[in-house]
Structure formats: structure tokens, C-alpha cells
Amino acid sequence: MTANNIREVVIVGGGTAGWMAATALSRMLKNQCRIRLVESDEIGIIGVGEATIPHITTFNANLGIDEDEFLRASKGTFKLGIEFVNWGAIGDRYIHGFGKMGPDLDGLPFHHFWLRMAQEGKVADLGAYSINSAAPLQAKFMRPRRDMAGSPLGEIVHAFHFDAGLYARYLRGLAEKNGVVRTEGKIVQVLQRESDGFIDAVVLESGEKIGGDLFIDCSGMRGVLIEQTLKTGYEDWSHWLPCDRAIAVPCASVEPLLPLTRSTAHTAGWQWRIPLQHRIGNGHVYSSKYMSDDEAESILLNNLDGEQLAEPRRIKYVPGRRTKAWNRNCVAMGLAAGFFEPIESTNIHLVQTAISRLMTFFPRAGFDAADIDEFNRQAQDEYEWIRDFIILHYKATERDDSPFWNYCRTMDIPDSLQRRMDLYRSNARIFHEGNELFGEVSWLQVMHGQRIRPAGYHPFADLRPSAMVAEYLDNVEQVIKKCVDVMPTHAEFIAANCAIEKPIDKRNQ
Image (cartoon, rainbow, N blue to C red; front, side, top):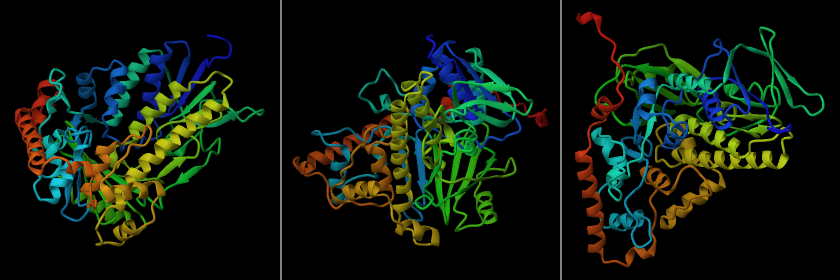
């Protein structure tokens, strides 16, 4: 390496973010750079994010991870989408499924033809036209069949549910094999260069001083480097996303084992349900302005499917993002960079994209301002696109049963989101912005699922005879039904491929 290359990378904080960064960087840099990870066992990890989105399959594959091995190690299950209950109105249910929603026709997205027939009352529920939405209703799952291109069975798109702590431990093993050195210790001081304010070293409680060229802050919401040291600043989005508390608790598993996350809206927030192989992860996200902590905990504990397995953990947060994800020689990742409630399972994904972006703009020791500025611009776009999608879940509702929902339904929203909603309300037009995470099918499912109804649809959808369009829709629905029928159950698929060893119950011996 030349003299002006980065030679020392210091990652502050372990957990999912820290070990994802350590594993990916060590694999890419191949011992051309020393990587140290500093973490303290005394400092707890939030770990609310046990559900993921499909992009993590690419991250794991790039690390050479065997999917079945990783799922056994993390006690994981599969995920085809998220079921939303009581969001548009009490009693409503819909699934935001990954993947496709029916094939395009005449160059038009499927939903325009569906909307035309819906006005004539000649269609099934929107979810019937996506295998990712239809299969979970019968607790069915399988990986996509690569030998069946063109069939819905070849188009299944999956993500995972897993124990985030076990995933971090699994990645730690890979990172340490790649040469990453872990140092146990609590940081008591951060030293900065007088000349430019760059971070020079971190000092541990033991007195050890760890210097570096590039520092990656994975210290969670505290932001030990990015905020406590560099005073970067934080953009608070709680006026659009009023939930600022969460309570998490595990419970015993129940049947059937569903391949989806469930999000159930309550009077001042919502409850998550994430099924793992050995337990169900549950949590209640809520607004402290509209509900007390005790009431929120009571709602959560009264809505568990199985026996409570631990004491509830309470978490406070401020939704938003750091004004700069990269400041001087420090890059923030994970909760140090920003926080979204886990409604669409985006937090682990944002670690993944931050790592990818850092790879793209990996600096030399001089740290060029143009690279840093572009990194921050792209990060801002990404956070704002996700922000708008999450706000949509709260804004698009007919609920008027509580002060919380009255606020959400009537609140002002970003112009960027208003434009999208107006385009859909007029003629069901949905457009993908740049490299944004959520595509047209995601926006369609949430807007329709939460009772936004367009006045019209693309006029080209009227060019075919009604009977021909009805036949096209019926064919899509029937093919998906037949495909779901031949799929194994989620539990059967896990038992055959990636089941954990069940502990022996000595009481029965």
C-alpha cells in the first residue's frame, strides 16, 4: 500500500452494526489494513431489529455465508413480507409482500389492470396476485426455484427473522478469522488532532490508547464519536413519526410458524411479532405523548401469543438521522447514524448500505471532501426516501378512535410524500426515485392496504376488452394458488433444511 493509504481502521461498538462492518471490511481489505473493534460487555445492545428485508441475502452471499448454517446459528426463520393489522381502520389486514405483483401487460404495471377490474367488482384481493402475499396466509414457504424461470415459484423473494445478538456473534467468528482484532473495554476519552479536529485515538478505561486513521462509529444512539465527540448534530423527525418509545419482550412459540412479521396497530402505536425457531420476539412501539409506559407495557403483555419468557426491556429513541453520516475521519453506522422504528425492518439494511457506500468511497489518508460530501448526500437521500415510506403508514389511515391517530391522519407531511400520494390518488401512478429502497410494488401495497383509492388508472388499461383483462387476472390468481398448494409449510421447510437442535426436556425422562 502507498504511504497515503488508510492503514488503521477502528470500529467503536460491536453488535450487529459493528460486526457487519468488521466482517465486510476485513473480507474486502484482505489484511492490507489493520482493523480493531472495541466493545464493552458492560454496555447493552438494543437489538430490536430481528427482522430483515431481502437485500440481506446479497450481503450474506457476498461474505460467503451458507444460508442454512447461518440460520441454525442465529435460530432464524424465513420472511416473505409483513402483515399489517388495524392500520387503515380497525379490522383491516393486508400483507406488504416482497417481490412481484402480477406480470406487466402491454408495457403497463399489473395494478392498472387490477384497478380497472376492481371498479367493476371482478377481482380478488390484491394480495392474491403475489406469491409472497398468498403463501404466508397458509404458512407456506420455499426458496425460489432457479430452474423455474417465469413461474411464481421461481420469483419467491425472501428475507429472515433472526436473533440479532446471535447473528453478531456468528459474524464475529468470521471477522476474527479474517484478522479483525477485538478489544474488550469501555472508552473513557476520545483524542482529537488539534490541527483539524480529526479523531486521533480512543482511550480505554484500562489506559490503553488505540489510534487509527479511519474510525467507524457503531456505538448506537449514544454516538460516542459522531455526536459526543464531533458534535455533528441530529435531525429530529418526531413531528412526522411521533412514536418515541419501545418495549420488547420474548414469548414462547405457537403454531403455525408463519413466514412473516406482523405489525398490529394499537391506540398510540403498534406491536411487532417476529417468529424465530425457539421463541417469538414481540415489542410495542408507541408515543410517550399519547400513552404512558405502564399502559404500553400492559397492552404488550396482554397481547402475547405465548408464555412470557423474560422481563420487558424499555427503549427510548428519537426518530431521525445524523446531519452527516461521515464527519472528518469518522463514519457513523447503524443507530449512531440514525433511527427508524422497525416497522419496515430497515435498520439492519441501513448498516448494509452504509458499508457498501463506504466501500465505494473508501478514502485515502487525506480524506477528500468531495468524496465525503457525496457519501453524505447519498445517505441523506436514502434516509429521506425511507422516512417518507414510513410516514405513509401513519398518514394513510381512516382511524379516528384516539388522539394519536387523529394527529397522524391530519398532520402535515413532507412535500415529497404528498406528491407521491397525489399521483396515486389521481391515476394510480407510482414512480421509483433514484436508488430508493422501496419500489413501486411496496408503495402500491401500503397505499392500497391503508385505504388510499385512486380516482382512475392509466388509460391504456382500457385498450383491451374487459373479458380479456378479466381472464388475464384470473389466470394470474389461479397460477399462484396452484403454486402455493405445492409449497411445503414454513415449519416443514425449516425442519428439512436449517432446524436448530431442540433442547432435551428432562421432565419427560
